[in-house]
Length: 207
Image (cartoon, rainbow, N blue to C red; front, side):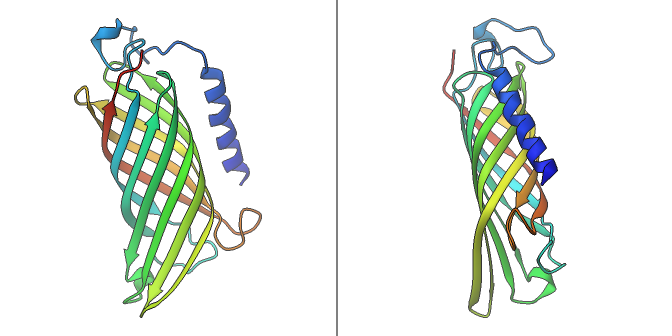
């Protein structure tokens, strides 16, 4: 938990320090506004992610099997300027025959929101984010089911490559994904890892 709090604080203060700064390219000299999405004063107003997602589940407080889950991630980001964004994030993962038990299905659904900090060049965008919200887990076997909702946070980042003016490729996104199932944040929690790759639709143009 100390590591999670430290990572969250670093993201928060990084966003505050970036507020009011001019959006410049990372590693390249800023270009005139008409030349590209990453150039000064020219950035996508909205970014929508559709991605495949892998979740490595920490089984603290749970059975020791069934650590690898597959699923999807979707997010929407509104960018008031070229550096700072506000992100809504949803992801879902599942595993059938969970833990090697035939007929047992395990599912996970997260709903998160928070600040996103981007560093843009003409073709590449490197970003970091700190997202907070909840996580819903459920399991079902022979018509019986059990579910719970608890707190969650995700801290991480990734890189996008602009294939066209309206479409980017999320080359990689890696998040430390903390969930507080079992006894909550003050007790047993899970240190998970989420990895996603997909496409980003870039809509609108900010100046």
